Image (tube, rainbow, N blue to C red; front, side, top):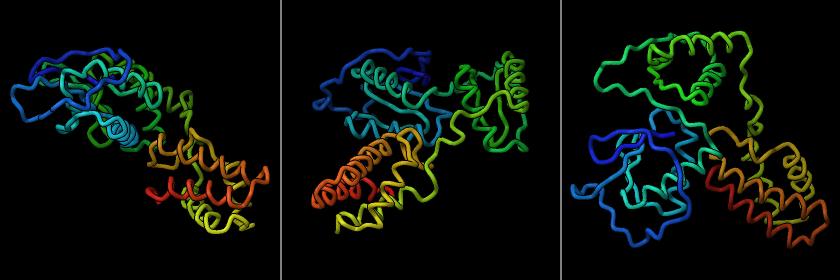
Length: 261
């Protein structure tokens, strides 16, 4: 869960709740207006993929917002709706890390030097910390936690080193070049629905891809859309659809892929 603050100096942990899309089209939001009450969501520690997914949802829903460093800023009037949006996102791309914030300097910090750890183990640790809701922050490969959580983190590190915790996503990534290949063969089929090489390639590719295993760096929402269109092309081929229908569906797949290749 992101840490939420209102105004300039009131911080607390806000649960994510609420539902529905607000009629904010007429809301005039100026983040520079000193009289505008704003809500700040601290996203320190979020991964690139999580931030990309959030940015895509904000754009899709035309949510009025601004960015201040690691904080998402929205008008107070739509706080409950944004809370609900985070609730949805946590189901899809969570859990979210809890940042270690200690502006007063009163918290005792324990550091774990993990320079020798492989990236795969670091990723497992990051997810485990998020799932356990342990406040933490990173300085390069150095993990910093509240000393009160030291023993819990020690146990996590021991479990990862012993192989007792493994990433559930180790193989959940599309093969190298899959997105490029989808685009190339969709382009050929859009021009000629009878292209036998591209027909066979699309059928083979779709059989090796999954909606929950996007290529590295591609937001899952975009990948789901691409996969839906790729499956539509594959079905049209295997079920013997008219060539013009195959070409039309391939054109939709090509359009979905184009922004990312």
